[in-house]
Length: 615
Image (tube, rainbow, N blue to C red):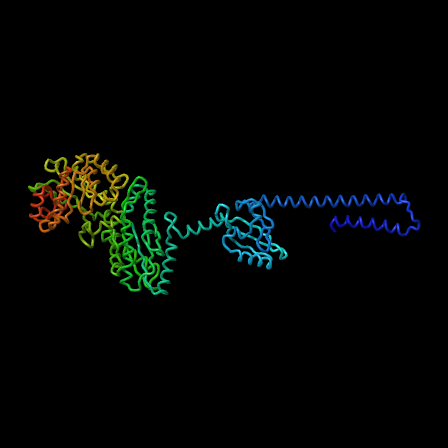
């Protein structure tokens, strides 16, 4: 029994006793002195009962105050709600979560915070909790600053009259879950879908194509010569460029298309909703792929550097569920490699014949890995002569004596060497061989004047230690470094002009000569050309072949010779095969030639034999 009730009962008993005593006494007057001890005892008892009751009330209030302090000090939230959603009580923990004062919260409704459900839905949920007794769920409330706060709520109905809820802020956990999900399905660098999510998107696209009766396409995109960026500028610059490329691709596709990163510098496009007619679907896919290809031809600024990139595109069409993820990706990849072998920076559609060609190229790459160690690679020299036919020097050319396929020219295998990175050890061997040859020529009066030109691949030239290795070879050979000519492609200079110019200047400072090979085929920037410390321009043979018959080629050649002369550069014409073309070149000021009119490329021993017997 509560102490306050006991005290009231004691008072009631005392008064009852007094009345009874008065009623049974026959004399009208009572002598209270006789009952004084009893009255004193009764009053003392009442006083003690009231004191005990008062102490109990104070303890209850203290406990309530401590409980309120505990609720306010916790980071978790606490409410009491009416059936309509009005706040009947709230602790400071919830107020801190939402950025409001307790007074402000008490003047509001739960619907003012809820970010997921509407007022009617909230009230229906409260009624359900009051009826069922308890419910745990998750929702979002809106913070004062507009942010979302993820909450886990355990709500208990109290006799159908009000609802008590405990709340926990689970935003950090939700953020962690979202990060885990993002890492599982999205590329960390670019934010694009990764291979795992790509597979899901392709499988969904196949199902949608089957149900909707329309076509689709998988487009495999691989950047051309991207390894050159990483090797010359570092992986941080390469990563920044990949982000720029991903943004460009996303801006070129349609809304609803997928752009994913396969890995490295490889991207995959998933194009949906194409025509059910294969010819129309091919045109639509080609249009989108070409838009992406042209978009990548712009310059990309990364820090203080400017990069020009291109990409090879392989396209595989699909209709319904006639394929699967692995087959489609392989077909698009095969078509992309065909685009690479065809000269890069182009769009190629998959055809069954490509699969057989790819198998042959794969075997070629495997064979190439043994070519250098098995000494199957050999060097030929093609003479370079002046107008009277006197020998000026030669260009060192690579050949591969394949065990089954016979003698192969660079056009048969150089792309595979570049793609596999084997061009680095092969290129180093060729350059070292050229330096050894010049070292052997320097001691002979008949050969010390000869110059030797070597083609240097873009990947080899942009290696961080290329200049240092070149310096070591020059010191070891102890020959006149000006007799060594490094031939660089016009495309290399266009791709990364600032880096190439700086590196050319370093190489030229060692005393070697620098030539731009195949000039005219790559649309060089005249600004870059003017800044390069070149010694030679070699006119691309495509302009020489029909020089006597094509007036356009004549104009191009005349322009190149005039420009080179104005810049103080030597001009060498490649691919001279007729006396008529040689005469035209000489008439226009070109004084050095290479071509079958003078000699085919010769093995070193044959070249030296012919040289000893009088050129």
